[in-house]
Length: 208
Image (cartoon, rainbow, N blue to C red; front, side, top):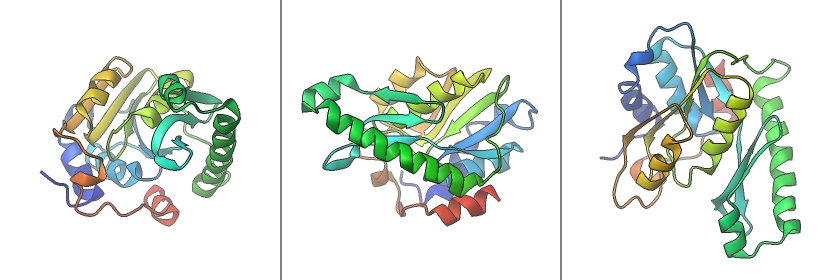
């Protein structure tokens, strides 16, 4: 099965989350940027508030799509140390990537929220939504960030993911909902007919 686009994927995913519908303790957070259109459909279906989880992937130098870690607000940093060691990346190169992505994290927080404060999640059930899981690095950082902010439960919800990654994340989230785990996996984009990049403008429009 291929999803038509992120809207279609969000509607399919929402069907797997009906047990969270109309609950006052639930908030849906889309990982910026691609997770936000998916999360919008989930939030609409569940009657839950929507906000954005601003997490940045740390891409391997020269291979930016390959995640070696991720960062989230609150100085949360996840590093895949075995990958860093395997690639023999120097600390200076790793620090340069972290510094660049920290700047982008701050830019996006300002672009998406302006002066509006981040949502208070203490005591809530947080549903973290992305358009798919490949390495899971970005989602790991998001889980850590929202645990640090006092979420009562952290639920990971994705339309699709690599089977190995989904199994690994089950141990870190309170619940993991993955609509499909295709084999062979290839990539997240391979399972969407339209996987065009989500723009900042679209994120702002959906949050509005």
